[in-house]
Each structure stands twice: as structure tokens, then as C-alpha cells.
Amino acid sequence: MQQTNPFTPRASLVRYWNTHVSNKLPIPQFLVSKASPLTPRDYAFFRKLVSHKTLSSRFESFCTLANLYCSFDDSSKDAIHRTNNDDANFALYSNKRFTNYGSSRVAGVDSFKNYSGGLNTVTDSFKKYSQASTRHSERFTNYAENTNVANTNFTSYGSKATAGSGNFNNYDKLVNVPNLGFASYDSGAVNRQMSFSSYGNETNSGGQSFTSYGKSARAGPTDFTNYAVSSNILQSDFTGYGESGGRVNNTFKSYGSSGNNPRSTFKTYGSGSNSGSDTFTSYRNGANVGQDSFENYAAKSNSGSASFENYGKSFNPGNDSFKGYGKGSVGRTIIGFKSYSVGRSFKDYNKQGVWFSQYSNLSASSGKMVNKWVEAGKFFRESMMKEGNVMVMPDIRDKMPSRSFLPGAISSKLPFSSSLVGEMKEVFHARRGSAMERVMIRALEECERSPSPGETKRCVGSGEAMIEFAVSVLGPNVVLRKTENVRGSRRRVMIGRVKAINGGKVTKSVSCHQSLYPYLLYYCHSVPKVRVYEADILDVDSKAKINHGVAICHLDTSAWGPEHGAFVALGSTPGKIEVCHWIFENDVTWTIGD
Image 1 (tube, rainbow, N blue to C red):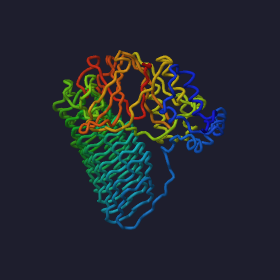
Image 2 (cartoon, rainbow, N blue to C red; image 1 turned 135 degrees about the horizontal axis):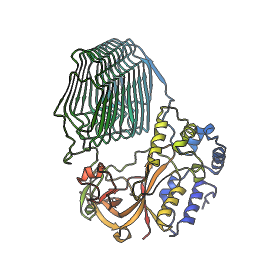
Image 3 (tube, rainbow, N blue to C red; image 1 turned 30 degrees about the horizontal axis):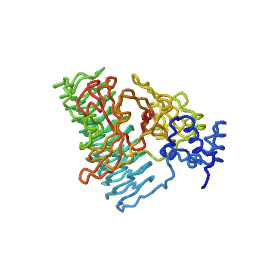
Image 4 (spheres, rainbow, N blue to C red; image 1 turned 90 degrees about the vertical axis):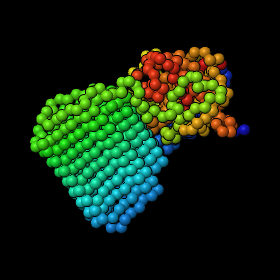
């Protein structure tokens, strides 16, 4: 029998378990599988580099040998130059740079279908694409769908083009960290039609920016339909959008609807434009909170119009501010608000030509509005944990990139603090404005957030740190519990045999959830006053066992915010009900041993 080398990170993790856990249970295979794969030689080498703060000099080999995920900003792509007039059909295509593509083309259509789908990281750029073309069109269908990190940049796309169209349909759906940039897109174009349909829907914690989009354009309509629907904390920035344009019509319909805290910034949007119109219909309706800022919107415009209809009827009131709105406009500039909800601040706007109709509290304070961003089955009541019950199981699949823990001796010496962002960026080669920087900042925000009342929390980047935190909260007699597999996801299942952990007594546990970061990082927190269950998951038709799930029920929800998705889904308020949820793939919960 081959002996395990005692100097590997895995062997070190096993020793840590054996000396800190008292119940004599073997170390869970889950922890062993997540341990660092570094060899003893590489382990010693990288420990030395970390001690001397020179790890960044071996960044690429460190990422590869330690099984990290450092490809958030992959640039190893071939540039594509193409100026002939042949139509192009890109299907099942991914991660390319288009430079000076289709410039001065006359007519024709380029089609992007099933482009960059299902990848961990998408890094596409379109630079000087279709520049100065005439009657040329582009169609993006199923672009970057179901990816983890999407970096897509459109620079000088369609600038000075005449006629033609660009259609973005089902773009960036189900993306974990969208990072999209449109700079000088459609700038100086004439009569070019743009449409964004089902754009950025069901995304999580990302950003999109439109800079000088349509600047000095003439007579080209742009439609945003079903934009960022059911997204989670998506930031969209519109700077200099439509600036100095003429007779350009923009429509925002079902924009940010049913999202969780969507945020948009409109700065000098439509400034200096002539005879254009903007229409916001059903904008951010059914969302949970949300925040929009309109600064110098339509300022110094001439004979334009902007109408807001059914705007901001969020599930919980958000906050919007209008500063310098329409200021300095001339001619018959008309700005109208109809069925617009409360929580707004209007400061220093052009009062002439601005009218308000049915501006009142339409924020769904009755609680009857349905918020669709909460997935079916994500939260349920404790009464559902009974044998024979049929329920919907949410998608419990892990959509994070595959990574390993770092050895504790390395992770404990790496910088991880908002005060050390510069050092963090140096270690992982994160450029300013890059997806790597965004990932780092979001991880820090999550890990450094103040704990909720009664909560103890810690982010851990090693198996040793996870064990140490669980033992510090629960004592040395701890058991790691996890859902067995992902079968049953997004379908109706039947509950089989149910076991209440610790005899169904009210207890506390430590739950650990993955965070996106180059190495495997978990957000662990103690959860007081819970009951934990294990249950067989059965196929509804055959009654065959397909999974063995772990569920946790929070009995005290009084400290939860009223906007929490659980109350949206179950129709109650903090402290009134208990809330249960499954432990997802590669997440775990720790309890005191039976």
C-alpha cells in the first residue's frame, strides 16, 4: 500500500483534523478533495516566495500548480481583422478579439449565435467593428449565456455607420459576474437601429457601462426591452449616452424588473440632444429596492421629451435622485412622470415643461406584488420536511469555477483586506478596471461586512481555517454535512426518509458558502437557533432515491431585513415565520456530533 507523503498539504490537513476534532471520525472526503494539490517541493517553494513577498513573480505557475482560477482576464486570443463584404455566421464560437472588423462594409449581416456560452470566463472585444459601414447589421443571439465571468468590450462599434442595425437578444443571461463595456458605441451613426432584448437577465453582481453611446448620432432608435430582468445587484452606468444626438428615440421597457437591488446611473444622458425622446415604461417594476441616479439628464436639450410611466413600483421602495434634470433645455422640452412611486429626490431641475401625473405611493406596500427574482423552491417552511411531501427543488448546482484551497501556511500570509488592496492586486496581477479587480473587491465587501445581530462570521481560504472556525463555535465534536449530489435540481421531488439532527433540538450550526475568488474561499458564519435535517430525495414518479439532501431551518428571522427574498417568496415579515433552505452543491454546514 502506497504511503501518503507527510509533507504534502493534504497530509497536513489530515493531521490538523486528527488533532482538533475529538470524535475520532475520519476527515470528510469533501475536505480532502478540496485540499491543495501542491507537491512537497512546490509547497516549500511557494511558501518561501510568500514569506519574501515575491509570489507575483511566479504568478502563472502558482495558479496552475495550486489549482487556482486566475483567468478572469484572459487575453490569449487571436485578433480577427476582416473588411470584405461577405456575410459571417459565428455559431459555437468563443473568446475572440475583433479589431477593425467590417469597417466600411456595405450591406450584409453578421450573425453571432450560441457565442461564448457555458464558459467559466468570457473575454471578447469588438474594436472598430462595423465602423463607417452602410446598411450593415449584426445579430447577437444566445451570447455568453450561462457563464461565470463575462468580460465583453465594444469600443467604437458602429461609429459613423449609416443605416443598418444591431440586435442583442438573450445576451449575457445567467452570468455570475458580468463586466460589460460599451464605449463610443454607435457614435456619430445615422439612422442606425439598436435593440437590446433579454439583455443581462438573471445575472449576479456585475456591472455594465455605456460611455458616449450614440454620441452625435442622428435619427436612430434604441430599444432596451427585458433588460436586466431578475438580476441580482446589477450596476449599469450610462455616461454621455446620446449626447448631442438628433431625433434619436430611446425606449426602456421592462428594464430591471423583478431584480434584486438593481442600480443605474444616468449622467449627462441625452445632454445637448435635439428633438429626441426617451420613454421609460415599466422600469424597475417588481424589483426589490433599487437605486437610480439621473444627473444632468437631457440638460441643454432642444425640443426633446422624456416620459416615465409605471416607473419604480418596487416591492420595497428604492431611492432615485434627479439632479439638474432637463436644466437649460429650450424649445418644447417635455418631461412627464405618470404612475411614478415615492422615495424620489428632485433637485435643481427645469420646472418648465415638467409635469407629474399620478405621482404617488405605488410601491406595493400591501405586499401583494410577486417578485420573480426569487427562484421557486429556494426557500420553504419547516412543515415541508415530512416524508411524502412533494416540493420544487431549486437549482443547487455549483456554478463557480473549480478551485482548491490554499495550504493554511500560505493563505494566512497572503494579503486579504480592503486596506491591502494594492498588495492583493499585485499578487494576482489585477489591472485597474479588470474583472479580477472586480472579483477581489466584491469578495472583500462580502467578507468585511458587519455581522448581523447574533452572527459570527469569517472568510476562510484553507481547510485548516474552516475546521478551526467550526471548532471555535461548536466545540471539537463537529460533523460536516453536505447534500450528496445535484440530482433533483429545478424539478419537483418527493421527500423520503427524514432525520432531524440532534433529535430535532434547537441548536446552532456553522454554514459555509463559496465566494468567487482565485483560490477556494468560503464565507462561513455561525447560525444560532436552527434545526438541521437530512432527507432522502425521491423521484416523484418512480419513488426511487436520487439524492440525499441537507436542509437548515432558521427559527429566528427577526433580524432579517424585510426585503429578504425569503419573505418575498413566502409572503411574510421578519420574525413571523421560520425559513428553510437546502445546502447547495459544494456548500456545507457543520453541526455538533450526535
